[in-house]
Length: 102
Image (tube, rainbow, N blue to C red; front, side, top):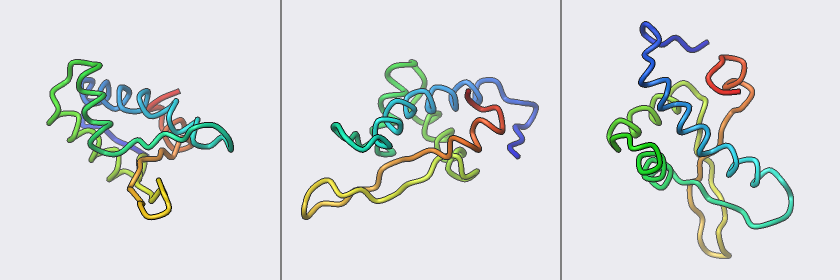
């Protein structure tokens, strides 16, 4: 399970900001129909930084931590017949189990 050194509230808040940004996008992608969204690493960092007024470097650090711990991962998505990109997805079961996000 996930241990934060003394539960770093600032980092924890940043995790929540990242996860709340990804939640609607990953949920939409798990439905069979409708437009897909393609949350990439940098687009997500950019959006979270802008929306929450958090330094981009800090959001990047938090995102890498979430990925190291296996909460957020990248998978390939086909965006056209010829183009494949890496998009983010979330292991929501682990996230909920470890109390990072409800």
